[in-house]
Length: 332
Ligand code: PBG
Image (cartoon, protein in one colour):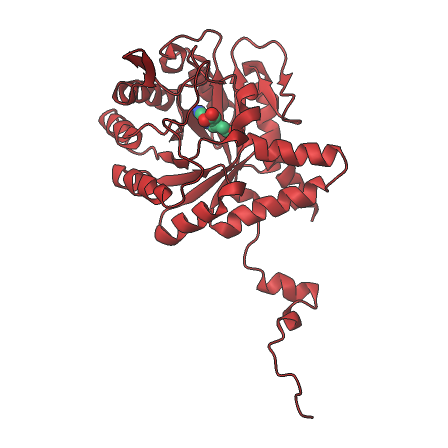
């Protein structure tokens, strides 16, 4: 019979579920996921973060239960944020061997030596002004003192390394942070510790709920002077180029969902460097809120949003949905 319409029939490949499974390019695995945890000093009972249903501020004594739940779910890595009892201008608690982050790392490594513990390395949760480093004043104007902050970042990273962190993740967008931390780790017998750099981190309004969870809102101004302008796509490649030169082992894009173009660009230019993407608090909160209203299907939308992040080029995803993902993937 003569073929009257000899057009390409892609639908041939979609008719059966088995065939769809065979040709699928991207699939989620629990191996891709990193769960963020907020650990607060002197907490009697864990506190729910109201803008992030399912997320809690944890005390040190909540860790045994939480960590065993995480391990049982098959999650391989956690990203730690500490919330100290006392904040000051330098964020001293984060550099102290008995500070909350050092204690949290030690506690988790004792409970679960095989769980990969990644330490967020930044000052906004530890300073009384809520900025990501030291604040200086010049002609009546306050600004973040980049180079003075580098020395403090070295001290913080070293404290985390000594406590037993498996990876250091500087998130402050301080110029030179990767090199400063690399030098410090290398000089202190931690040359085996990798650095995951928040290479392209945007000054995003999607961080809103996180600031409740981590109690790290800036008390004045915003972070536009150090985080990237959401209008800039190609500038991300300059940020990445710099971090690669400085020795970043893993790169990160943040937020994820609204920046898939940036993820794709970086993966294309640097296919040989592992890339992480952070599905941030606002992305999580929006899905949760719409699902609570019954407007969307939480599981389906969450998994689709995460799949899109991976499809764009992320090799790993930091997500507050990680525990749910573990459950959802198992049930499939
Ligand atoms: C800063 C930091 C922030 C987030 C992670 N690390 C907040 C900020 O830069 O204001 C946001 C993460 C999220 O929204 O889930 N140390």
